[in-house]
Length: 368
Image 1 (cartoon, rainbow, N blue to C red):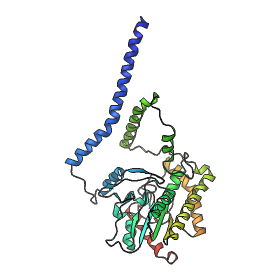
Image 2: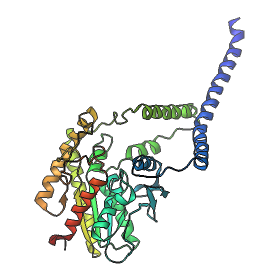
Image 3: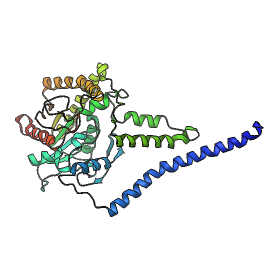
Image 4: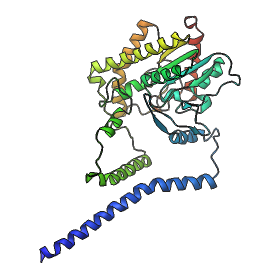
């Protein structure tokens, strides 16, 4: 009796599994479709929010999230063209909009760095390049990008020079991403922020003949739900960050050395074409006298993160003091104000202090 019913039971079980797979795929592919339709009707029938003094921060946060990145050879990724009220990405190189004076005549300055230079936390007119342009009258372009290391900026600079660009001034603003991304235990001193993810994706493809291939939609759906719930509940998304620079002195030294080497090569390129080069070690909330009582710097994550900065930043500071060629701006935010919006990003007021200091460096006799 049992044997005669087994084929039927297996058939029913197989049909049920197939139904689960079909439903998972419908949900998986349906989420972005529903979102797109929802966004369309919202844009058609709901008034667009205005970036007033009261709501520009919320608008900026939304637009920063909506401004996407696309893959670019050699630099890793670059901003995709985007038009918003506080964030605009434009131009042939996907650069963040810089607000300049009407006249394009005179000197030209190119700025490079990570998300702080790009301007996370500030509208277009309040980024470091925009404020530098307002202070000095020097026409400026923002080539910073979210998550970039100095080596990626160097690759972008090479591309620009190859295309015939000859800026009068080039500013590299680095340090935070060198520590955060390269100290990740999955990365080396030569890595950028997405090396592990990209390497994992291309080195272990899932074969369509494998049964695991059919579970991919369910796994991806579970990941989406988990991330959405985490955002809704305000869960910290950084609990999985594990770094090892504090345990590997050779790696820490290599990271510091590589940053200085990137600056040196960039300087040689810029000066070879008649320009001036300025490299800056950027501030981070673990050092200095800015007010940080609005930040949760005593969390387990931040304590672990600070171990990495305590390993590398003192080395860089000492090297800058002994060499004197580049600039230490770790203390530029030493003001009794809340200038940081998280452990490394700063708002418009913080950008103003940085831009003012850069203007002083440019106008000093040593830089002439």
